[in-house]
Image 1: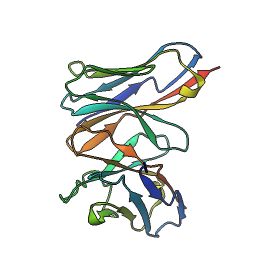
Image 2: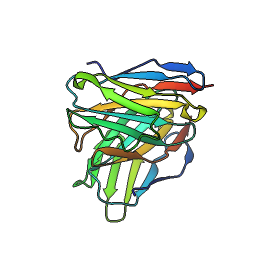
Image 3: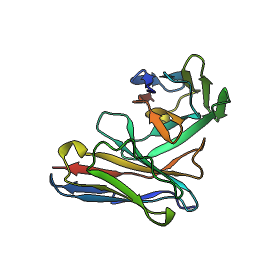
Image 4: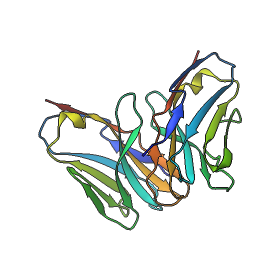
Length: 114
Length: 110
């Protein structure tokens, strides 16, 4: 079946611009996660959505970052006024439940801020 | 605060050898521990998931163990192959988040 998809696969932007990254989770998965992986670093948790509950935003690095999930399915991660340190691969994952469950990752969006 | 450490950071072995990758963590209050592999330019592939109440899981040539009391997990790869070359990540899930180690970059020499 279809896995998690993300778009765009690559994004190059200028410092100060806003960007939107999209994630389409696996159909029926109620949990959705955003992570990022900076060059040479491990994976960093950003935000988590579970059903209609308020999202866990504890991993967002600054108030320039926000995310929403419409209709419990597609999610958009928005980065406002991008900075060079925002350059990273942004990964989205979904899972069927919020508890002990395997998360299925998308291919990621590679963001480069010039 | 949960900290996850993976040792070694990089490992190169000849094809056919058995090898062990290590993952240590500081907080034993976890839901599960998961091992992933990441190939260059690609997303993550889940390898094995060990629930908090379990001690090990096996899939093919892979075996992962979990010892919460000592804060350790190991990933054992038997009869390594060049196709096993990748970065291996362990990740701990607690509450709603998953915390990753920095990975072990594995290279299998033909």
